Image (cartoon, rainbow, N blue to C red; front, side, top):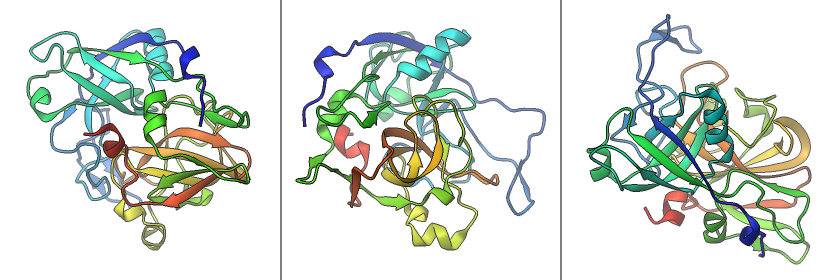
Length: 286
């Protein structure tokens, strides 16, 4: 399939490795009413990366790899909006200066861009290291498919994912599972799908098993049924959205693994083909 990638602008945005933070209430209250003290967002997560299971961690909203943020609000808005999954990221300060990685997701609320780096580079990095992202992808369009909105997706990663155009004009894409709209929670109603994420709710154990949510991994591609993300996040019968798992399961009611959206259409033009290997780690070669 042809895209307009040769017309897209590549631009620098940057942030610093953002330390984990804790609010006034240190406890995460589970959906069963139990208070837990758990690791959560931010910092450098050394022992979980894209391709690893995201559901059975002793943590909450864990962001695999490196979490970055810009201290200036307007600049962080640009970092969050323009960074795309698959973009190259480069460390520009500290002992790991020159190390290269890839953007793997964007987490709303706390406003972090999440980045994969090889383990050796993680060991050299520290909080406040500067990281530049070569932002490229917003405005991506598929020729002949104006009704499909592309977002948050690096054009070269688009080319590596095995999209197939069918004779009836639909686009097939490998996904590890399909998720019904009634399981989508925190983040619904956001003004745009071009930044951040929203969560699959995991409070129902049987639903987790039925839809394979209990086996999800960081970086998995998933298809969200009856979910419209073209101009904000909402339920719309027949709509389809392709997304990627960016953070771990959560213990809070209404939360779960976070999904950054990649493609969305108000009709059923995007069709998922179940493939357990549909993970961006495989497409990025990491």
